[in-house]
Length: 200
Ligand SMILES: [Zn+2]
Image (cartoon, rainbow, N blue to C red; front, side, top):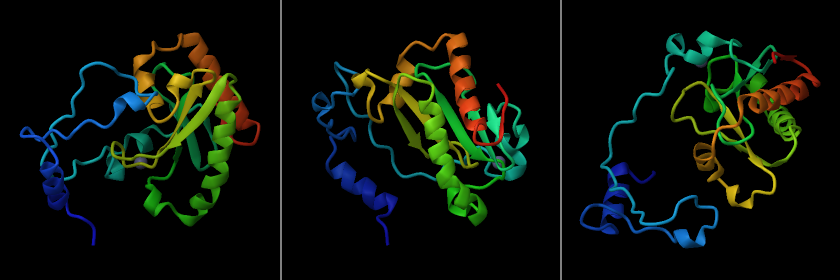
């Protein structure tokens, strides 16, 4: 049996100050941490119910409603979509099955395609050029419909390495619109070279 939220909370509070703030980790040793100066940990909140996710009910799922409307590439079973507008990193795209499911209930026929597709999208994003690394992530606390993040970190910008790249994406000025569209088109073309359809 796992540790309950109440047990975790009690154990954490025992290590926290009177306001419920835990000590800072050694931020000065994290060379890719984007912030400096006076920083403190937020007080830890008490256990609570899980908040509902977007589109938990397929009838109410924005991804199912949009289908390939905003996709840059798709095939019969999968969609690749960008963010709604340019952000700080050169490419961020999201891979999703057309069918409404999450990773834990992904049908076997889609699961069998997922491994090769992850590799394909990584290569397509890398083909944009001047990409140092393509980070691949699946969180899933926001939307219920399975979605994989592909987050490109610029080459020769070592300060932007590691998972903090996702935070630098919010800090860096957004890409010029034209460059953003050209990068997405390059990803879509690279995907379509191995099947499916590019929309840009
Ligand atoms: Zn859905």
